[in-house]
Image (cartoon, rainbow, N blue to C red; front, side, top):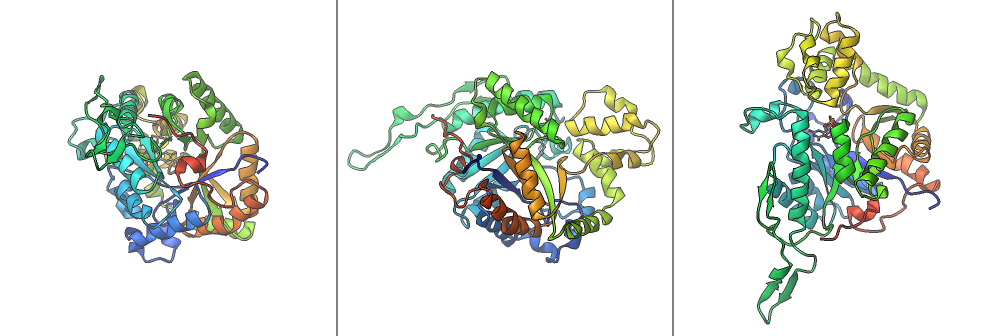
Length: 435
Ligand SMILES: Cc1cc2nc3c(=O)[nH]c(=O)nc-3n(C[C@H](O)[C@H](O)[C@H](O)COP(=O)(O)O)c2cc1C
């Protein structure tokens, strides 16, 4: 392969990532609650030689969402464990919150997935934006942004120590002497920090990848700092090519400053795609989705994704200015507040039209040929190592990507023609950390 191979991660979302997806696909609406929905998508992504599939996690659901969107937020690890049994190669990345888990327990769950899948697990590290989570976990308050990231540093440190608590060669299996493992090769974390105290070893040996692959999508200064320190894959990236090039360069410079090899941090920003056999067909499909969007959903979602409770605000008056006098709860809140400050007299409903939806991803609309050109241009400019592909509808966009975009990229020698290894680290060309 002349240029470096691209990497692709398939974002799985019920019926597709566009808010109107569920209204245009033909499936039975309840199908998104069945294992077969996930199985079909995972197998399609694997047929297309994707590096990984990805499941998000939202541990508190504002009730307004049930009106407008399919609600399918299962526990990602449970779903990925089921998918491990029906796939052979594809990486399995799931989200886990550092604010609402205990590090020892989370380390165990991801290492279990890594064992059961033969080394295909990845952990998307999130600090959880929505304050609604606190009440679900019996916490009196949702920690603020800075506090969440301070904890996250310690949390990830503890998790990696738990994963490293067995040397790779600890199992002996000496039946004659009756020694299953060499106890001298166990190293208890015995971690005592500001936020966490964790004593004991993982309750099984080190997993195939040593560490499941560490992923982050932080966009704030603190989020980027955490990614530079630990992440091996970033899902973030700004929408313009120029900004994306400097984002990746900055991330790499910061990774190098913390003593890491920048090559070991891949940037696969989220890209929502709508494909068509012709440009006109792609635009017609995207238009149909846009025409079905709901302004009611838009303002509530703008608040929710910014970490605010939609039930607490009136859409027909401006957002209260005291919000931006306090510390911002998230990057998405900054965007919303900036839009509100630009139009201080406009009601929330109107301001919300100006902030992007979902994970802040770009929406690509076009033909497979155009998408292949786009992906290659971004790789050549040094903006990305690949993309996290969000089909605006599923499985249509993923199937179209696999059947039509992948062959173009293969012909242009930018994408693998077969899996050459069996672990997620192999696919991503990431080193396996030593214990
Ligand atoms: C592709 C992508 C996937 C994400 N997945 C999740 C998720 O599953 N759960 C979650 O709570 N946040 C998720 N986030 C939000 C990020 O973790 C992060 O909080 C957000 O990008 C804001 O950055 P900040 O935390 O640095 O302010 C995701 C973001 C992106 C771009």
